[in-house]
Length: 60
Image 1 (tube, rainbow, N blue to C red):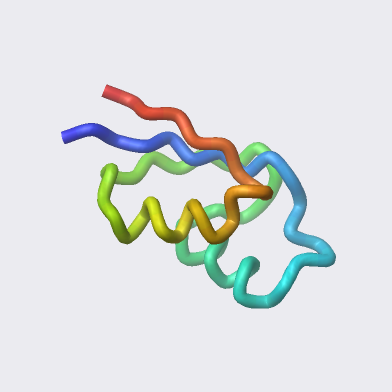
Image 2 (tube, rainbow, N blue to C red):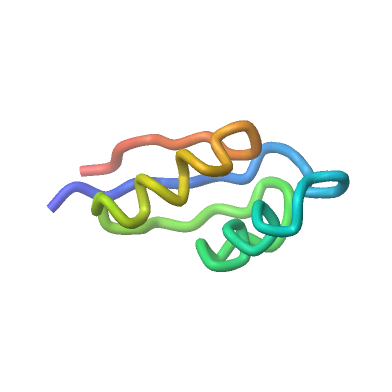
């Protein structure tokens, strides 16, 4: 199954609390932090919610 490499590229300072919570639930704690998750609709929705703070790459 395909996987997503999610990298936090911007700080969450000044963002809404629910954006901070979404980053935390993805496992991201700070700038340049990277996590690899399965490519599932749940994670795609979370990434879409904070797309201005992260970058996403597909990993095989």
